[in-house]
Figure 1: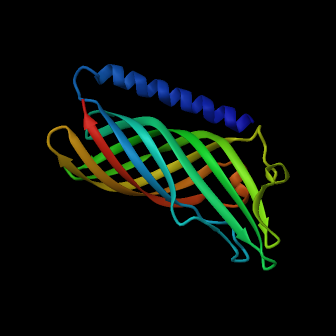
Figure 2 (figure 1 turned 45 degrees about the vertical axis):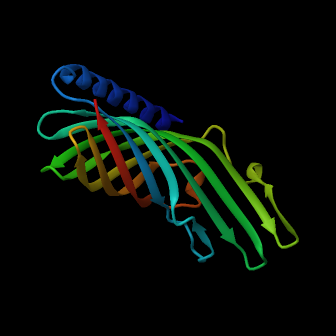
Length: 211
């Protein structure tokens, strides 16, 4: 809990800095709102090669982007992500876990010319809900076994570091689309850490509209 509070305090400080920068430059530069379709690939903590995540775990973001000087921009908003893990035993017994997570991204974007960019930052958030289920050959229905899976209501916090690089296409004067492969590292994870590694990869597809 102590580390979670520290990350919450850090998130608050970064948010205040973000708002301060927005107020400082708000009268000179254009703002933008955006949407991001996130396609993530988690890696299972599989030592017996009978565990796996869905190849693509979906998510989305609603974002606010504020340009600064020297080709830098600050980006924040809200991120939702979904993931599902499954384990198969030789006895035809199956286990699966699913997680719904909500996070606040705090990102710095560095433009490289007109078309390319780098992005670095953090995602701090919480496990909104999680579920564990089991199934076997004698019963085709999935049975809720969450309470037997070390699920904890008091350990929901997560924090990621994110690095991505992408290409942008301007559409008119106010619209842009971009695609950016990313790699993220979990500094802090919750219940799902039992079944996934700290590192995962994916692709983000952004659409921004300037104000």
